[in-house]
Amino acid sequence: MNYDYKKQLRSFKYAWKGICACVGREQNLDFHLLVMVLVIIAGIGFGISRMEWVAVILCFGMVISAELFNSAVERLTDLAHPDLHPLAGKVKDIAAGAVLVTAIAAAAVGLIIFLPYVF
Image 1 (spheres, rainbow, N blue to C red):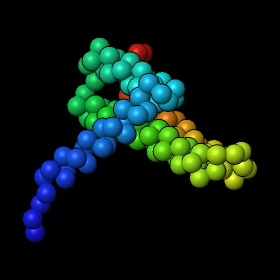
Image 2 (tube, rainbow, N blue to C red):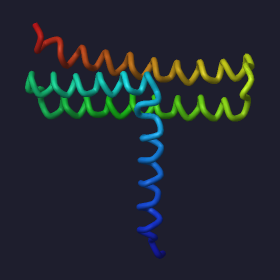
Image 3 (cartoon, rainbow, N blue to C red):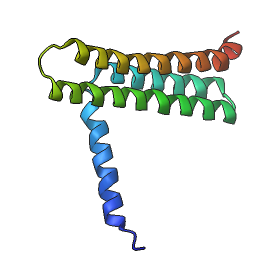
């Protein structure tokens, strides 16, 4: 099997392009990125453990990924049905709900990690 490294590099380029298409244009993603920076600062300040960093980083990845998927679903829904449609609205609501569930779980992990340092 011949592995095409150039194709793989192009894939990373397209993925980065997709991330950049949302940063600065998706308000909720920008909010999550801001919170991520604040949590990193808090983690450094409190000196959280290696395993706590692992949990925090996994939460970052889950929330940011969920937000990117939500943005993709919203844009695809708008493309498929530009006019207001109840089913299109439900699709968007469900995708947003997935982000909310992920963010609540990440916030719970954050509380479990950071509350003992605060008190």
